[in-house]
Amino acid sequence: MKWLFEVTTMLKNLLQMQDPELALAIDFGASVRLNAQSVSDSLRRIEPDVLYKAPSRMGGSDKEVYVFIILENQTTPDRRMFLRLLACMTEIWLLEEREQIAEGVPQKDVILNGMLPITLYSGKSDWLSAISMKSMVDLPPQFERFLPVFEIQFMNLNQMSKETLRSTALGPALRVLKGENLPVDQFSPLLREAFADLTKTYEGQPAVVEHVIKFLLLFVQHRRPEEEQPVLYKVLTEVHLADDEN
Image (tube, rainbow, N blue to C red; front, side):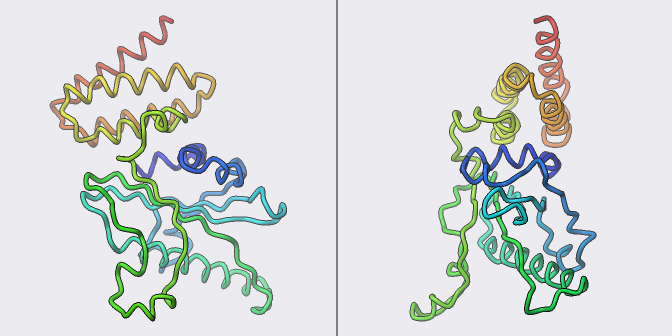
């Protein structure tokens, strides 16, 4: 699923589904994708799935923000999520500080960029508990105020409505992902509908459509049983041919 968000439009679409104003505050068109494996040994061990650095449209043209996403598709929620996010954020900031000092910026003048942590959960179980350090630490209430606290852009795919999943070009891919565990007689019409909506609604965005189509093909290849794949490829082919005729 990580490959889906290697195009910044998909990350922008994801954010638009939950927080359109926040999506407008980031210039995704001028963003730069960072490879966590190549920038830091420490970050490699706690690697976010996708990491971008993008200009902010708020607070001046020189402001930038790190946007990273952790894709959580385990069967059950990960109670360590807050700690994983905190580790990623800390390592990115430490790396940024080291880079500025290496460029000659005095330590007292180092200014760090903002951070937007995103978690997309697509597991089977409901994620009912809050993502916080408090859920991991056993301590008296009097000490809770000393724990680190920050907001997380948390998105639960299972709770996204049909309307939300039809609101952007990313929607068809997420609808298919949401139906991953359906039997083939239910998954097949879902795939057909998602593919048809994609090609009809977003025909003016050919690069985006091509990217999502590749995702759907890879999804069928790697996430559906081998015996189902000929039927599902036929569905995609039929929709594609129908579009060409129209």
